[in-house]
Length: 247
Image (cartoon, rainbow, N blue to C red; front, side, top):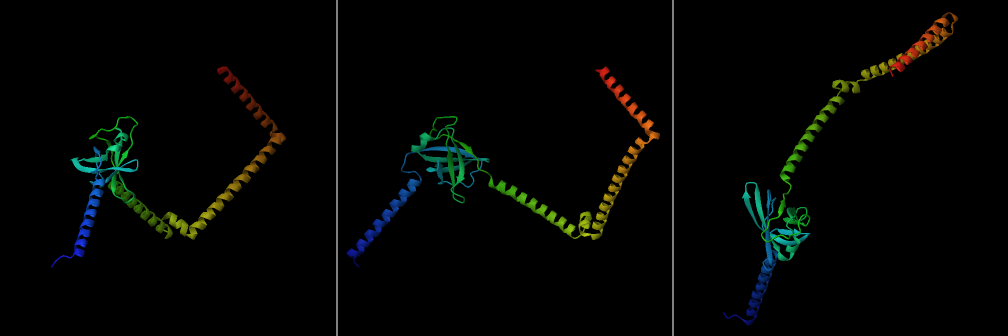
C-alpha cells in the first residue's frame, strides 16, 4: 500500500511538532539546570537539610539565581549541599553571606536562601567557596515539645475538672461550705456575733473614757491626777537632760 501525499504531510507535521516539543523541553530543563548559562559553584554544610532535594531552587534577594546541584552526607551529624549559581550574581554574593533552608510558600518545595553579606567583608565569594550555613529549626523537636505541653495541659484540665466536680457535689471543706445551708447559716451567725462583740467593746471603751474624765474632775481624786501629771512632766525633763548630756 502506497503512502499518499496527504499522509506524508501529516507524518511530517507530527514529526516536526514532536521535535519542537523536544527542543522546548530540553531548553526548559536546561534553563532550570543552568545548562546554557555561565555558572559557578559554592557549598554549605548543614546538620539537617530538612527535606531539601537536588534540583530545588536557590534564591538571592527573592530571585531564583541557581539550583541545588548535589547533597552528600559528610558524617553522622552533617551533610554538604552544593549549589550551582548564575555567574552574573557572583559579584553580589560576599564571603560573609549566609545560606539557609526555607520553603516556597507555606506548603511549597524546599529551597536554599542566600542572605546578603557585606557586613564584615566586601570580598566576593570565590568559585567553589563555602558559605556559613544557618541550620533550620528542627520541626520534630518542636512538635515533641508541643505534644508534651498539650499532654500537661490536658492532665491539668482533668485535675481541675475533678476538683470542681467534688466541690459541686459537696465533698471536702470548700464543697461542704458552698453547698451546706447549715454551715452558711452558722458562718453568718458567727459574723453577727463578732459584730455584736465589737460593738460592746466599743461601748465599754467609751464608758471608761467618760468615767475617767469624770474622775479627773472629782475634788477627791484631783490631787492624785495632778501629782501624776507633775511626775510625768519631771520624768520627761530628766529624759531630755540625759539625752542632751550624751550628745
